[in-house]
Length: 288
Image 1 (spheres, rainbow, N blue to C red):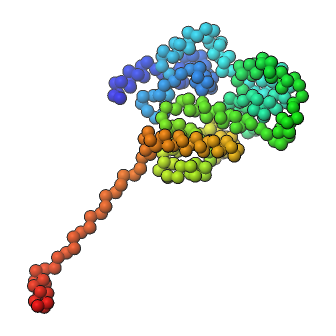
Image 2: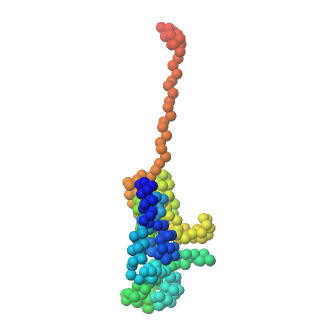
């Protein structure tokens, strides 16, 4: 694509930061709206994996009924205390529901004590509480089987967040290597090396491996904690991620092989020097 075409395309689209300002959203709210499919983005034609928002999409969002209140309500997130109040249950029961995987976090952050604070979509919590099938979970005693799982330390919040975040990342990828990189982001390097044995493919894959959405300075305790939350630690979760990674790399390889160093030409072997004519004549005479 020519530079003039890219310039023309940029004239009809804008960066995510600019789009967030024009829609009256905080960047965190904008990113969540994109992840949830409320706002559509397109690849930046300049390359590099960046995304842009077309002007027509901004106008579509603005023209939606109830804008901006409706959009803000759909991306509103709450923590445990506010979430429990929305569902009219004690915070302890809300936490048990989340640990059992019945309500799924959409994001997290680390507070000043480096404790994980899980955040939930307020809209989803209201829908859960409004469903009559969930009334026993909200009002009655927790069934014995579920209590046993909680007593054994079950906590599905990290795993459910990883599954949800992977879906978010995949929604924003168009290239098969980017998709493979997204899957690999949730496996530790040892698991990746066992699945992708070719070192050049692993190196290429790492270019598209996104990091945790929240992190501190590289190597800091906060960064290590976020990396831990990002990495699958359950056997069956690791199993299906490995299978997905193998399949994604196969598709990426067929689409575009990973780059490799150019083969070096074989060194030229010099011709064996010929003996002088006088020496040849002497050898012939001696043989005779």
